[in-house]
Image 1 (cartoon, rainbow over the protein chains, first blue to last red):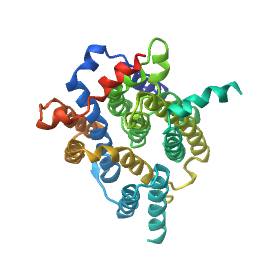
Image 2 (image 1 turned 90 degrees about the vertical axis):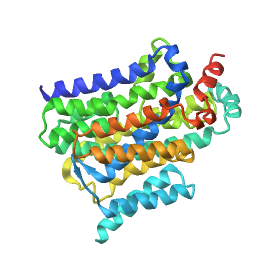
Image 3 (image 1 turned 30 degrees about the horizontal axis):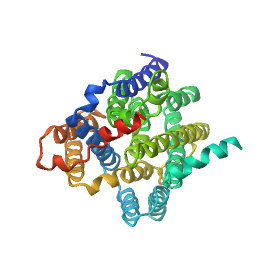
Image 4 (image 1 turned 135 degrees about the vertical axis):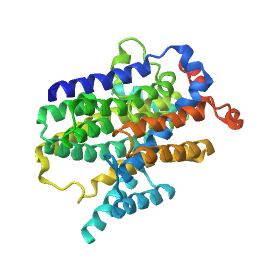
Length: 102
Length: 249
């Protein structure tokens, strides 16, 4: 498969998945079980993405304490009620400063 | 002028408008920096600038884009790169469940709306108290994110691999933002349990399954928790149902 074919297939495939989600019949959406699952799916996916970003590199475990410290300080900012942008800036800045200092 | 006049009653009806707009701007700024990282990484993986931009404009799903480029850069086969992107992108299909009753996209509008169904827009929409606030949050976040994600990608692709993105701490951007999006859900006991289960499943599968599979497997935790007729199920607000009725008017 050529590079362009891969890119186009991935792009159209991902769009098709998004469209399929918006095209589900009413009867499926009205199901309380489906509604519970729908509410919990982002929780599971976001949790999985976070730990993948922090502790996985491809199929290997990894951990960079400076990255962990940066995100941890961002979490403290969240807990203190700071805005999304503040959390973003703090996490990046702490990680970059620790990398520069070590 | 007429636009301002038309916007005024809308402001009254939506007091959280400013708050939502600020949060959307914050997400978009992060997306610009994150997109810059993607552009630089993808160019370093020897994708052409048109190919990099096609991914950000058409695929438009950060995790899938990073997965695709990551597999290609590691020398993996094209089919594996495609599978990783689609596996990660499949969660966007599930986001249609909470979003459809909120957005009620009909006809051709659905084709346009679908492109914006991603982590950030979904999290912003479902976090709002009313369907109207949810729609505003979805579109404010989606449009700002699309614009800055692509501008950032273009800048990153032009700079290419000339900078060290981890020295600037840009790898902290994604987990920090995902954590911020997750945060409100952790106030519920069931949300905390699902988050913990997803973390355990993901970490257990990292070395066993192909890249991208652990995140999809974590979705099964949410499915299992939702299917279980748990004691506390009665406490969960059936929000999408309430929204559907109100959205009709």
